[in-house]
Length: 338
Image 1: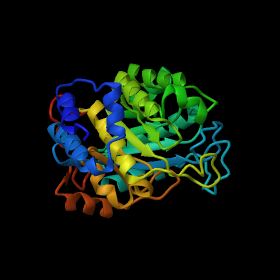
Image 2: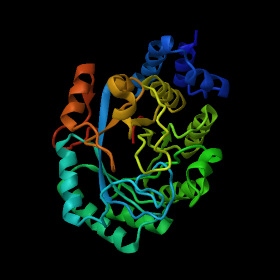
Image 3: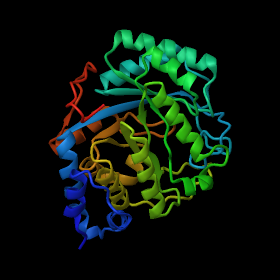
Image 4: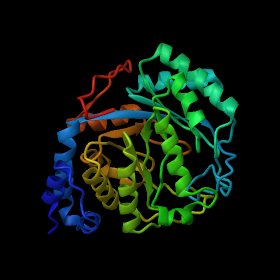
């Protein structure tokens, strides 16, 4: 039987699991899954109690990306039937923030497709963020592709709180899912965001054909980045993308991965991200035992659960949402949350 209690003890003592222990987490027999989830919940509850933070995405520019990321329906190699449009007007980005606040989201994330943002796109987004901040007490995250430090500083000056840029997978496996930029390019963007004084949101995608060691390498690489938030996506294959046939995840596998990330990142916000509904299915509520954050109202090009459905799931678990209807955010415990 897997020694799940050992994983929790090490995490609570800020001890890093060995690679062998990480593999044991990922290969935990399904009959021991509830014990594994309980161990992860012991860690989660120490730092986050039974609260859940919500986040909402805005796909502010869709399609026409020059990159060849094999998982993405907006990439240059995708023929997926998605909406394609240029940067949304500021009024639509602002309205999206209002919808996020009404959905009890603590954070609103503006995302655009493309390798890197254009100067005029940063200007437009910055103006929208200034307007949002004047109206709503909601945190703003931006996911705009590869960025230099000067671009990151412009976002910071406008009031952006956080930048999302996922490492996606291990450095060794990265070339199997993308050839138009490198793993090091992604790390450079994170360094630039941090140098600009921005918080970091960075995670990965599970289920792209990677090995267990790739997931462990990703989790370890993120320990070096020290992100304030880690979104754990599970691949939702989209017809027309190179990974459209890569649909082998089980709910049990997804839960074990979330537990691994909790043990290796005990104090960090971990978000159940894209692919939640497709891969976790009826076991979605169990994911909140290791994770403490979740998306509402869908993703970039795939639908997701509407906010009231997520509220109900959280309520039925006996957990609570950390932000009220108006988007006001409670004070975080010192040293626990960003």
